[in-house]
Image (tube, rainbow, N blue to C red; front, side):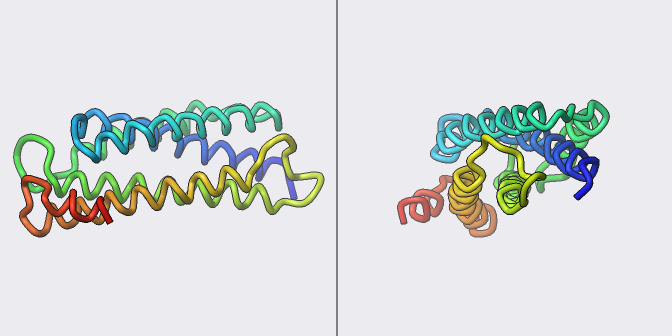
Length: 172
């Protein structure tokens, strides 16, 4: 395997982590004081820790994050906020659903990164990282986001402004 492909792969995932962290941070802030916000606050810490691990991995293999890719990911996350969410002002349950889906996809992509790196053979496999544990943590994050996503869909599509369905689904 060529080292430059690994460099590109890691830089791409770092850019994704930039966008994902910004999205998670904004979602946690917009959902503060709710069960969804509490879950997102906790996940935000894990997502940040995973991003630091990725940065340590980049350093260990001698790769610098791509300023251009990171800035583009940051910009695209901001532009994504302009998507119509079904109401003229404020945060809508439909917007929450879309954001949870986007964050879920990012977390599943992060899991794919850890699984892929864990399957590399010597000498390409970076040393000093527990890729199996990282992949399992990403899978657990995905499962939690999936519960939140299903609750958000119930709220958005069932007209449940008080979150009764959200609490019922979350308690399962």
